[in-house]
Length: 306
Image (cartoon, rainbow, N blue to C red; front, side, top):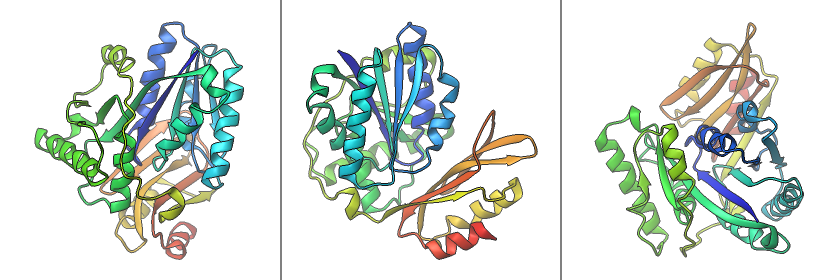
């Protein structure tokens, strides 16, 4: 049977960075790996960031978004059926930061996928810089994503103090208590910076299905995603947008990501409240994506149209 792993994580947690190294571990062992970007969005930025992995032993696939949850689940299942015929040893799924993890278990356990796939690992990535002031909805998604994990891997721990790491762990545990999660997750945190030797251990963390109170579906939340294609950008304009868009007057903006071309150099933008990372990359697409709750679309449109 094909092993299938789910790498979860809330918006901007660092899933894609983790998957680059995680997939490389299996590729280096000669395994044939399929990476499935399972997102609700119409444009998948994270898939572009994984392009360097594509080769004889790795292929990238995507589930098209922009539809409701039932439609998305059908597309997810159809894509996994086709991938089961492709000779992969392992399939790694990277979902949206607001993904309903129940969809993963429901689809994998459905016929005929239950005859072809075996769940390997469920790993939740949590940013060690996670804000203590996330909304109740965001807290619920955070809890639902760690509920079944075999390991909760903290990202960017080298950028924060030990006290902050302790605080984030408590925040995650509290979020799980709020949904009455029936398991103790305190012993599955991994809070040290990753190196190549760690991924042999990550490959064996497994998962644990656990019950919790499901408070809402994606359709019942106020999460929205706005796309801006071919919008002229340069570094000064990106700096200006990032300095204002998280102020609260544009809604509860939780993440901005995308690419822009400055001269002959592609730049990648990855921003969450209080933090904006801009890096040079080999290739990109002129797109900026804004994700959040109760977004003021009119004001955000003006911000990007100016």
